[in-house]
Amino acid sequence: MLIGLLDTDQYSAGNICNYLQCTGHEVRVLITVPEMLLALKSCTIDLLLVATSAGDKSGLELLTSIRNECQLKGPVLFLINRRDEHNVGELLKAGLNDYCLKPVRAKELLTRVSACLGNTSQVNIFDVKKEYLGYVFDVLNSSVVFGGKRVNLSQPEFHLAMYFFENRERALSRSQLLQAAYRESSDGESLPNSLDMLVSSLRKKLDTSITSPVLRLKQIYGFGYRLTSLI
Image (tube, rainbow, N blue to C red; front, side, top):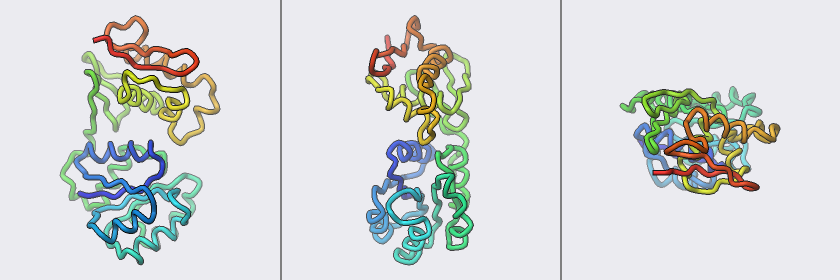
């Protein structure tokens, strides 16, 4: 299945691509509204995912362009910020198939994508896993398996851990790490020490303390942190 994705938030788009590609979908990322409209006219897209925050058009204007200007008959799923949820009824009446609130949760998104596609996808949407250095990340359940044990993490802990493992051996700034942990939430900004608390928790839960024999989460004073492999 070819899924078109328009989301100008690069981190959000990257996460959504990971979720979809892990379940066997092909994803075409669209950067702007004009690019999306051109793509809809030039190729067959089985499902279109659109963040309503993209571009200057309202959600209804976007949907009207998609349905009328591009004559798209296939399913359209909007990614909507909570403050705009009151407009959903109008959008559904105008031809929207479904929506997800941002920040997107993997299990909800994949369930709604499967429903929009009429359950024609044969992949198991409840088995999305990624492995890094012997650590298996269960995307849907926010848990990590390593050394024969499973550790459950909070959403911010899981997002931050994934970001560290995806960018291991790189120096990551505090602002980068807070954005990765909290995505579009403002929680990280309201808690000055929230990053240090999350890192402290991950050191204990994932055995990445300064005395760990395999992986270590090291502080870079005045800048941020780095995940370093010792093997």
